[in-house]
Amino acid sequence: MVQIFSTFEHSTNLELAITVLEKNGIHKENIFAVPLTNRKTERRLFDSIHNADGISLVSTGAALGTAFAVIGASIGFKLAWGPIYCGLIGTSAGFILGVCIDLFYYKVIKKQRRLLRGKNSEVILLIECEEEQADTVEDILWHHYAFGTARVV
Image 1 (tube, rainbow, N blue to C red):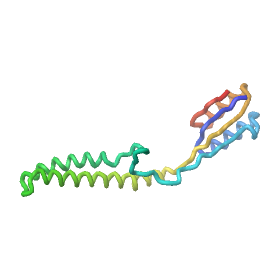
Image 2: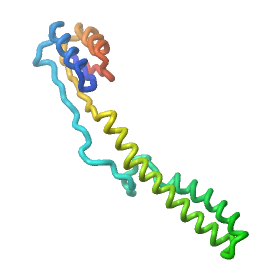
Image 3: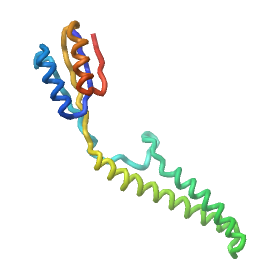
Image 4: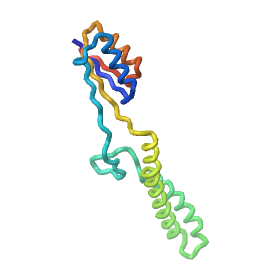
């Protein structure tokens, strides 16, 4: 007995694959579909020491802070406060502006893209069959746009 695992997008291709498998001699008792659930909570933007997701809110702030520091220090030579204070003010303003841009991007724009794209959960399909049927089953799954397959003997 061979077990074949595959992943599908929850769509009509999955239903068609199951129907074709049943027509090719795989019994309903040997087909098991498990839908994965979507994330219920929003991702946290601020990382902790134990959890990091690869999104950095500081990188744009650091770049804009550096640029504004150079501009502020250059302008500061002509002002009464001098280049050091004006450079520090430029650094602070650039950093705050960069963090605000990143927050807006990840909270508003990325969220709208995710909503427009739609959240489709995947389905894991488990099929038990004889070794002679395994190649046919995999061909059927690939023909119906499986994301991936695995065979366990």
